[in-house]
Amino acid sequence: MIRCSYVEESTMSILKWKTFYTFDPKSNSWSIPKINGDAPPVLASASTTVIDQKGKMYLWAGIGSNVPILDTINLVWTKGSSVGAPNVGLLASATTLLPDNKIIYLEDTNNDNISQIYIYDTVNDNWTTKATSGTIPPKKSGMSVILGLDGQRVIIFGGLDFTSKEQLYELSLINFVWRIPKTSGIAPKESRNAHRANVIGNYMVISYGSGYTTENDILLLDISNVNEYIWTNEFKPSSSISISVKTTSVPILPPSTLPPLPPSSQLGMATVGHGRSSVGHGRSRTLDRPTDRLTDRLTDHFFYIFAAFLLRQLKKRAKTFFF
Image 1 (tube, rainbow, N blue to C red):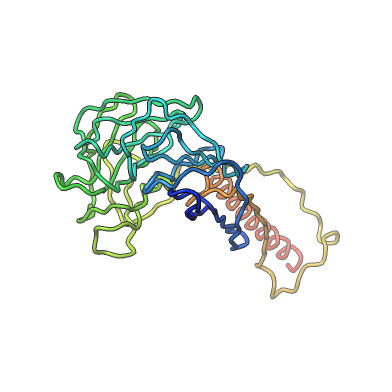
Image 2 (cartoon, helix red, strand yellow):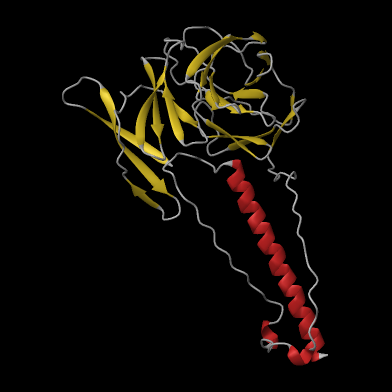
């Protein structure tokens, strides 16, 4: 996780990023790393939520001659091109990283709706503009956006607008057509803005924000079925993870060759400990990457199965020894 602050330089009338703080969840401690390069000026409401697979954070507010990029691994500022980008002030843009390493920007403060979207290619360092069609949502300040599970659509929720009561829209990344997806379940009665949305398993998880009366509530939208999304209060872990455990046959030794057994009061109890370590890159992430979460879950399941296997063997050997 990375956090930033800024101060005003005495020789200039603009604010520049000055100090960054990193938080290590393993040691539960904060630190101030040294960051090299020319820090960009502070842009009010600039989008800072996009970090790619290489740990690079992209900041853009639709103003200026370049795209500030912070390498959170090597701790250095670099600049991306803004040639072809709209210089229109995309304040508080809703952004997300696409599977092809492109960033999509969905908010244009100069239009009354989201009829155009802007895409930055982080690999080739260039911009493109796409016109959209279909049921185009109105301009929504402070909305959230996530990438669909199939990587072929983005879903937006909430945001401030006074022309529509619709809270949920979906944009196809194949033909750039907007639609209002079919939903079931009990939808939230009130919308919200300036909130957070993340994908966890099969769910769009919406939290925090303003514009609603219920505090500390978490919204869950099951997006596993593209034909019908489901508002729910129950989180079910994904069932798509399958675990295959290969076992080998171990000969059972006669009781005379077995090692001494623990006292009978301890039979039936077995503990297997394992440790996991993580390396922090100083990058902001509410959640680990999907591969990290999958590795952790597979590791946990393996050790649980292994512990159960040891427990069964202890019981079998105890029965053979005593009876």
